[in-house]
Length: 234
Image (cartoon, rainbow, N blue to C red; front, top):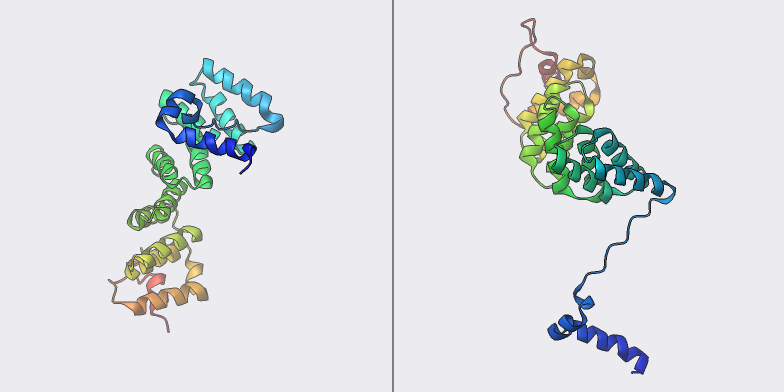
């Protein structure tokens, strides 16, 4: 081994020694993470950051700052900006939206769920936030909670096919075919023309054959619902 190759080896050994750590100091410090490169937007990022130090609860500036960070791809900066504002000033819907998106893109599942939960608390009748929380719970394997949120989203917007797909998938995972069939019935009651589409009709027939489900709800005029008729049709 040459002298030059032995030097880094000796330094590594010294840094593993408790006595050397005390003596060298620097060996025990983790390297600082380099500042994110905001490119041409760096001056305005710095300006807004400094402004928020003076007025941390300026909602407009905080939102502009977080949105600017998002456009540069600084996802960690986005979540920190949202967390700092929430800690000092309370929750803000726009910042929570950005925080959810940034955390989801980073794969920070628990943090994404936290942001989505705060959004649901702020606007419980917003179907999109219910879906976001359902997706976060599903990512964490919390299927019962996910199904409950998807179901609530479907109740809020029963004519939305993507929401139907999410709730049916969750009920299939939980082996709850009757709930899946009920979700289809709710959907076709909101969009009657969908009841005769082959994909919807076949799915409902297959679910109806899987098990004996409670009788379908009747339509408002007292007759059988189109969903029930579609499920029984040959």
